[in-house]
Image 1: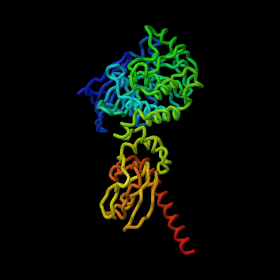
Image 2: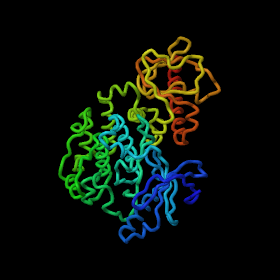
Image 3: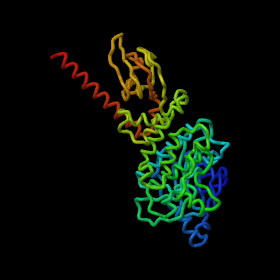
Image 4: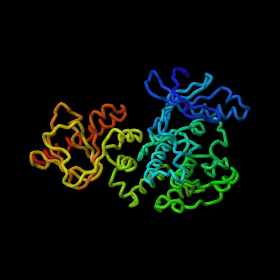
Length: 432
C-alpha cells in the first residue's frame, strides 16, 4: 500500500498547480484524513513562483493546532523536510460549495444564510487570534456532507492567510481576483474587513449563481470591484427578501466605513434575516443552527461558554418546540437527561403543589446528571406557554470535551448555589 509518512493513501481527491490532495488513513488515530502533498520541485519552480509556493505551504503548516473551531478544517500535522512535503488535515466528505454557484444547482435561501452565518463565526474566531484568510471563495469552503438540508461547513486553505501576530513579510497579490476587496486589489494594508467583503461576494454567488463582479480578464474584474455596484441579488433570483439584498450590499461596500465593522455585526444581521417572515415556514418545521447559536449566546446558563463550546453544545443536544400545557417531565418517571429552557416559561409541581416557575436560561431535571443514582424524577414540569427546550443527554455530555463539561458543571453549580441562597432567604423570612 502506498504511503506518505505514516499515512496510508486510499485515493486521490484532487490536484492543483503545485499540490495533490489525497484521502488517507491515519493508522494510529484510526481516522480518515486529507493530505496535501507538495513536491520539492514546486519550491524550485523559478525564484518567484517557488518562493510563493513555499510561503503558502509554510503559512498553512504554521497554523497546525491553532485554528481549532468546528467550522474551520483542522490541521493535524505538517512535515516540511520531506519530498513531498505535506500537510495532514481533517477530511470533510461533502466537497466544496463550488457546485452550488451554478444557477441550476442553487441551495435553498435558508441554507445559504446558515452557511454564511457559520463562516462568519469561524472567521471571527480566526480574527481574534490574529488570522485573516485573504482567499475566501466557494472552492475553499467545504460542506460536511451533500445531503439536503445539511448546512455544516468548514473553511479551508489558509495558505494565503495574513497572520497579524508575526513580523513575517506578507506576499502581495495572493488570492482570487473575483472575490478580493478593493483594499486587497489595491494592495492596501488589510484587516478583517477584507474577509467580510469576500464572504459577501461568496454569499451573492450562492444566492444567485452569478458573481457580482465578472469580466473577460482580471483588469476588468478589478475595475468593477473598485468602481461599479452590482445588481441586487433579488433581481437575479425570485424570492430573495430585501433583508438579504441589504446584507450583501453592506458586506460588499467599497469603503471600510460603510462596510460591516465587525464580524458580530455581520452575524447579527444574518440572524435577524433568518427571523424574517420569509423563513417563517421553515422555522416552524425546525430550529435552525443560526437560531440555536444566537439563543445560546443570550442565555445566562451559557454565559461562560466560548463560541467553540457553544457549537459543541449544538451538536450534543436535542432541541424541541413545545406547546402550552405540554408535560415535559413527570413525577416518578426515569430520565437520563436534563433540560435548559431556551424560550418561554414552565412550572414545576411536586405532589400537586407549585414549587417554582422558570424562565429562559434556567434548567430543570438536572439531578439526572448530578445524582444519577437517585433514579426517578421528583417533580412534574409543564409548559406555561409555547417554549423551546434544550435537552442534554447525560451520556452525550459524558463524551463532550473537557472544556464543555466544565462549562456545564460551573453553570449547574452556580444555579444550585443561587437556589440554596433563595431557600435560605425564604426560610429566614418565614422565621422572622
